[in-house]
Image (cartoon, rainbow, N blue to C red):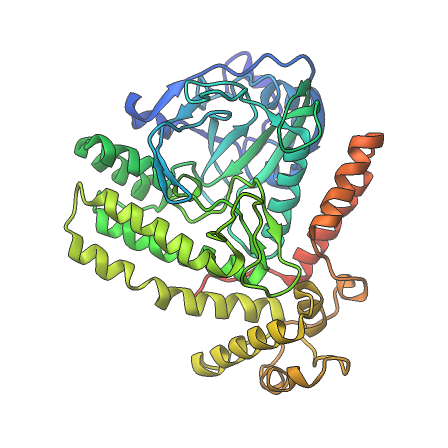
Length: 468
């Protein structure tokens, strides 16, 4: 329906920024199932991201209007008329699973942001779908709080990420095996640059549906990469570049996703779906996030390998359309793309300008060695080193890194108010403390304060430019 027609003309959408889309419908029935959101007993608004909402023209909604759209899922005007649960397969801890899909979420709307980029509003905890299997389709309130913290922190640290858009408590009591139960329930809405996954392509390869595969390649190139055509090699090239950057920025952020399955890798290289995530306290390659990752498959230091492996699964899927040899050649470029990406990300976090690739890489290697040898906290080090010489208390194991750091000129002044306080970290003890105040006393002030501190850090760091 037109935004100018009743009953939408009175809705407070920003006419300059609200640009509804429904491009997903062009893919057709093989890609999704129309579904209905759960009817929740309550809808209590706990978090609304007006900064993100402003980018898609939705920040003028009142709280009641916000709840109607993101708790009761009244369709937004001009976009998808009904929620769509997407179909996909995937490797889960390297075991292929053809029985998955959007089991507790759906794509609710598509919009263009102020830069013209296609964005999806997707859910987590919105009820059962045909792909729920034995799940209840719900999300714990704690899971929603954790996703807010992860996505805000990653955004501030320059990682391409989905953004937590809304969190609404739903008044249900959930039973879970891995946390005290009954526990409170919520529905999360996230703003993402698409929800197409590597696993979406794997499903079509499994079905040997070349026609649908070519249609999907064309859709992703056109709508998510802004290019004409349906060349699978061109798509693979983009995805390798984006996923190498994602892996590099995870490492520079000290972040461990925890479950880097192929169904959790967005085709745009944007991080999303935060379950058992952690930020590593120190530069320990074997640090894991998921208690069930006994082999350390997705440990901190193995994330580039894991993401590269997932990109290989996309190439395997695209064999429906393309020959193997040119795809192998593209896959072999992953490391060459990863190295400058992590160098750029670390220099940015250090507040330093690059000199030349050899000097910059030497600095990165020296810092990694010193972090491992000293056991210095990751967040403490980057806070202390930003745009200034290392303090005297950094011992002799830092001598090499100190000398190389001093050769790199600051890229920004250290004059933001953030640098006069304490470093912003997101270690598990603080996450649990924030949740405890909510669980025990319904006290949300610690979460609000943490989000404000994270955003202050992001402002102080500035925007990370795209890798070379």
